[in-house]
Image 1 (cartoon, rainbow, N blue to C red):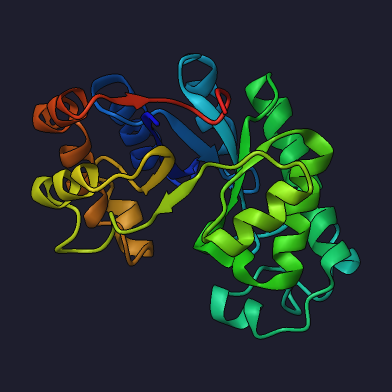
Image 2: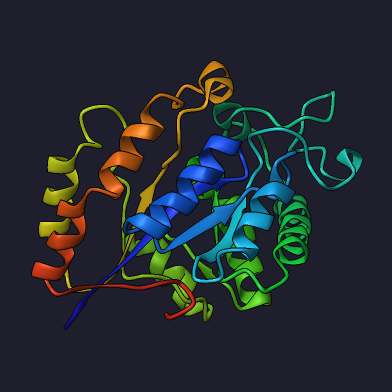
Length: 252
């Protein structure tokens, strides 16, 4: 069986540095797709970049742990704080989450992303990977089933559940390319060398230098390091030597 690789850049729309880094990692490097945060102020800016880059596969980065919802907070009370904002990931997954409320907000974010990019999003995943929570996994799976979008799955059990409901998903998911010490060229080369047969999604978080992001995000300084690695010619050469085919969620 051939080896194929989707390289997805999360957090598209979170900041101008992320938007620029994502597009550059696609044009100059190995990024094949990105997921858009539809509930952030920069969503329209990122969508404009997506429309100008039709070769970039674009999905939806479903958010329940940053900024504010698109739905009326009164209709999703199990997901928001008293002020109507989303909690952090630890607070969210400790709650008794109403899965129908999660699906309501996910539908709103998917619809806005579709309107902004002017085409159907190809896939969905979650900010802070919160759909290990059973209620949120159900909501992601249901949204994917309704829309025909592919979905990120984190492990074989979840993958089997999604596929049993007719949801397309890659065969493997790699989240090892993150955090200091794991985002240099040597680390990514090791990941590439060890890729199994089938379709693998590699998650990444590229970005250009962005002082505003560095002031508000714990992962702001690492993004330019990821970008430099993703556009390094040695990485593309490794894919070619290994006969690893870049691909997208749309091609699943």
